[in-house]
Length: 193
Image (cartoon, rainbow, N blue to C red; front, top):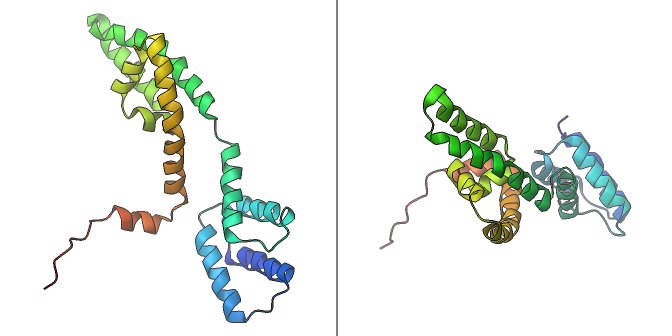
């Protein structure tokens, strides 16, 4: 269910009641509009739960930044850990290596079957792993690494996966209109005279 302005107005009402501030109707409307614009892309239940968690655990009026941080924390609860992602990646390497060996066989479409199997394995990987690898060929490269090279690869993976997750969060949390503006043509700068 989507968040509504009424939901946000109720949250803002609680914030002002808790703070004891007297504010104008105009200020409340502006605050509701701003909070709504910032929170509308999230599911209603997540926002209300985050607001309630922050309200119950702070001694000062609830701030939008605290609610957004709590939303991110709640969303992260459902994500796999970095270690779980690494285990998932290494869990497919033997199969990928076996399939890659089958590429050279042309009898009875074995090579095509092996290629298709690797494509399916890659497609089934979580988005974070696909962002890390970027292609099936990179998955194959990792599959053929020695155990020593895999230790170094794991260190690179652990370092990079946090950055990948943060980029994914930014894409998810940024309103579509802003993403469209950012992905549009870059304006050309002209020299003034």
